[in-house]
Length: 291
Ligand SMILES: NC(=O)c1ccc[n+]([C@@H]2O[C@H](COP(=O)([O-])OP(=O)(O)OC[C@H]3O[C@@H](n4cnc5c(N)ncnc54)[C@H](OP(=O)(O)O)[C@@H]3O)[C@@H](O)[C@H]2O)c1
Image (spheres, rainbow, N blue to C red):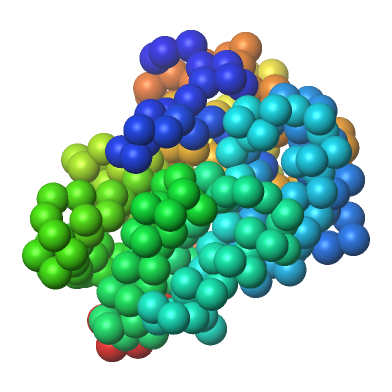
């Protein structure tokens, strides 16, 4: 495989580049977020994954400014929550997120989940498309969309192109973010996305710590001389995904980014992956189109 390093990037359909390793801040307390993000930026992460519902967009923005790194070197994501689904609410929320984080633009805005019904999904997407045209947002995408929601999004994009004046006016899908790890591999969704050049982000890449001690995982950690967390994050990278490990613990923040001096063999990658479908987080992916 290509020899990744912490500066490796993936070229998005939008034309922008996204760092292949992200730093997650779900469940990071708002008053500890600046510190955790500064720690992460200090050891080389250049990509922070937040969301409105995490209530810590302000801390992420503070860290981005206080890091003194050029803004262009940091990739910052937020997500539109279910509560703000729909054209008007989503449009307003993008402005609120910019203000809360204190940033001039957002690198990536995702629809957090497909809940809210078809009309609201289309309206939210249209709000994201307009935000890109206005320079407020650089790239857009979805999270937790099942293949049925993704197919619907393609229809919405075609409809918006017809309604708004042609090719490109329906927006460009750049990223899909999903719970992905060896106990929830989602190869079907990943194939759909990869076939269209869409970057696949993997959340809960270390399964929130719930699989430590698994026999195969422990065996591979011993074989490669790495921690079980490092093996899981490296599995994600080598599958071609963009893992988003979260930690508030400085030693773990560094450990989770020390991934670039080993290579898991193809056999071991396959051995670690299971046929199980056991998400540890929520699972909007399987929700119906009317949910
Ligand atoms: N789009 C969505 O719906 C969605 C849903 C969930 C998550 N996400 C994103 O994905 C990110 C990661 O997912 P996640 O937070 O659910 O889970 P995760 O990254 O798989 O696991 C985080 C947990 O593992 C612990 N941990 C981290 N590194 C460790 C290490 N090296 N050794 C042992 N334990 C370690 C952390 O503890 P400490 O923090 O105490 O160190 C924390 O309890 C989130 O922060 C968020 O940005 C998105």
